[in-house]
Image (cartoon, rainbow, N blue to C red; front, side, top):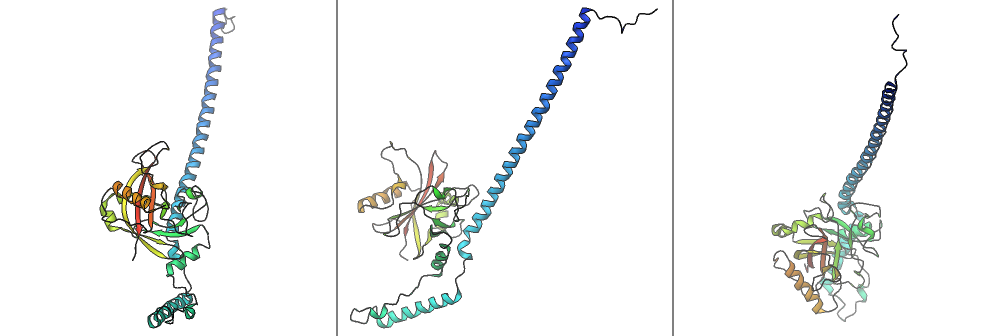
Length: 315
């Protein structure tokens, strides 16, 4: 009679081996389960990252689209043709009146010219319409044949429009904005204007092209339109700078100059600007001439800035 090996009692060693084998199976199952959980977690994390990355890209592309629309905003505003015709006629009549009668009736009495005639250019009237959207819009800045053509905003602080567009909506591009301390009531000396250096070529990124003198020679004029005038500014210097620490001495903090206290302070600013310039533009400014300083980030050094300075043209 053959012994049934399968039914034979297990020796102690066999029982130990079987126990170890079962333990290994349990451990292997646990490891497999942990691996599955880990894979699921990684998958969920990747899905979340992809989702938020897609949102960021969509927001980035949307901001680019909005920025391009914004740069053409002034051109899209239409002024009533009747009003334009009336303004043109009023301008012509006023000029003819001045030509034939002079500025008064010959006795120094301007009583015949008491009627206020709006003879502002169409571009100025368009800006006035744009200000109905947001009263913080103080001007329009443009450099022909570049990407720079934007409304200029001004707020009570210099942070509000860092990440907001002209509609006050959040935007990665932010806005071009005028320093809070500039006053239009009694015009300050220097229009200090900030804008981001966006890698998509928008905002003030094109300012960095002024490091090339040839680019300057092809784009020497900045157009600046307010609700009072359509002015031009001639570029006199371009330079690299940075934000300086409070304890640094004998440095040129161009960003602190908005209103000259006197002629000496004005001339000192112009001297520093010309000395810092990457090349000689052949232009300078004299005390009493309005100035404009455009500032954007530059990565040549930590907290670097690229700066363009211009003076108001008489023509």
